[in-house]
Image 1: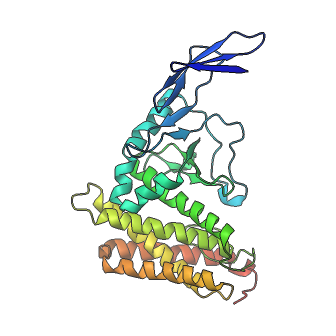
Image 2: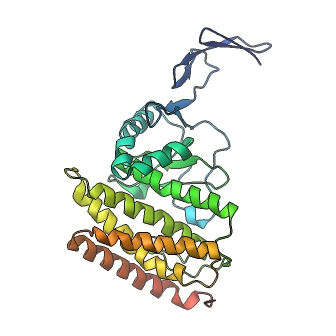
Image 3: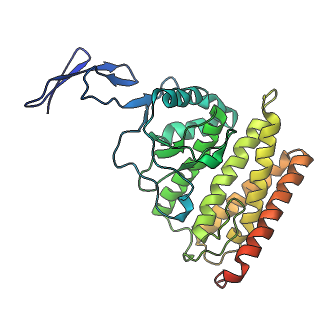
Length: 307
């Protein structure tokens, strides 16, 4: 294909085919009236100075991560106009939602996020604030997500998944632990036993969510403040249940020890601004019930402990 660009227009010429003229739009993509052209789409930058963010529903190689842990995810989705508008509506308020959860959350998303890949919404997500999402460690900066129902849900999804991306990158640079792949650990957010590395990843991302929702709950006049407290209490209780196994592992390296010790210290500092007692009690009861059910299902089949 021969391509020429003049005055904001691309002309694509190919032998034995009509020319395709593509009109560039400032910051948000391009369009063409030619039937041979399928437009790529982008969302506006998170901040006024940030570049547009690709909303990639075209790449033929976009795929879900492998493994049973992603069995509830649906296939990548080609967006129609209605779905694209829903993405834009949620995205338009995401920067504010991130900022209310801590200024560093917006900075982090701006620095790390390069691409959003839409997924189909699983039928069990329901009509509330649910969504499904994932990252792939070999595609740093890309995030897969179902259509977000609102900006706060999308902001929380970014916080959650970007922690996975950060920790995956860190784990490629330094060795944090030498634990094996055996799945033996209880994680309150999962029904199946987790390997040590999976528990570390999940706890790190849930710790960030607990901090994100706590910061939002501390904002005076926040319309969904009570919901934010409930989210914070639940995530903090989940992290509290997972930390002992992480901290007590004999497989941690020196750097890994520093890492999980700082996670524990961050968890402890959250107690300076506790959630209302009712939310804390419900969160603790939820974790206790999850542990009891998990133990009934898996205690007899777990591999022997190494610690």
